[in-house]
Amino acid sequence: MDSKSPAVSKITVPAILERKLHGEKITSLTAYDYPTARLIDEAGIDIVLVGDSLAQVMLGYDSTLPLTAEEMLHHLRAVRRGVQRALVVADLPYGSYHLGEKEALETSLRFVKQGGAEAVKIEGGKNRARLIRRLVGAEIPVMGHIGLTPQSIHRMGGYSVQGRSLESANTLLADAQALEDSGAFAVVLEAIPRELAAIVTRRLRIPTIGIGAGPECDGQILVFHDVVGLTFGRSAKFVRPYANLGQALHDALTRFKGDVLGSRYPSDSESYHWSSALLDQFEKEVSSKTRS
Ligand code: KIV
Image (cartoon, rainbow, N blue to C red; front, side, top):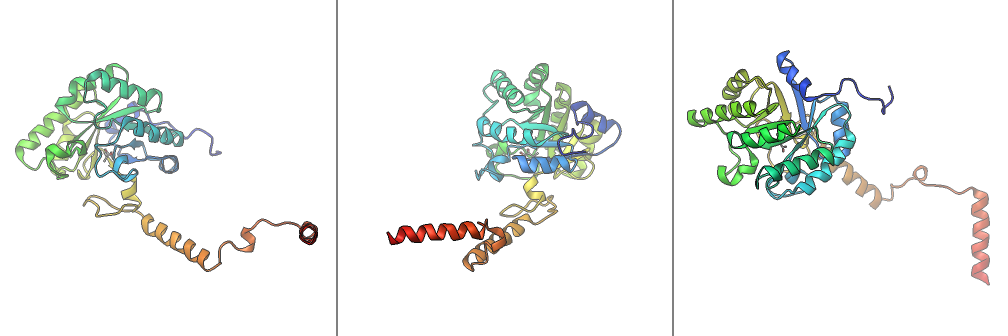
């Protein structure tokens, strides 16, 4: 099969729902550009999320809050071009759906029509139920996201584990149920105790995708840069780096610098050449011009 042939069995929303019925795990990673989206898709990951972590990981903002729908769309389109098999989900950025259902619908429709998203993700529980019904009614599949929701940073007062008390666990369970009832096809559970995630997972018919929520979730999602060790700062407890690309890139760049400074790059074989006849002729022409 050449690299242009369609990959086996495109992942769709019904295919994700079926995974839960058959007890098969779901894999998901974030992507923000064409080459990483392509690598993730070729590795057979099921869901590619163009997450609003884009704000921090790729654009250098200190939270997800400043990210605009325009910025998201730009990266979503690059990811779309790199993915053939996986389900492409786009995060609705902070402030792109808070003014009301009309705004949420407009942003989501742009992501689907102009960006090629096959679903959108929205942070929040019960408070998003009406909105999710509206989007699903417009044929836009929705993934929920509860637990640690980074867009609520100011309300939460930091990025801390959620659902530690019985009261917040009850709220989270009710939120998960509300997401399912409103038509969401999956729900991300972020940074909650394993035991709570296991109970939510058992009670829902739709799949749970965990990030820092333990192994009983129906699937797992991580931020691509965390998985390949391309971050600056300390990683969260749940991050398992499968490569150290940060170090590998640092080494490569330092070696390039050293080779240029030491005149080891480029070598003769990395240079284009004239034939010796052309060189002779040109040197004669140049020296005759110098003399006259
Ligand atoms: O934006 C993101 O990367 C996310 C995942 C952490 C689920 O929302």
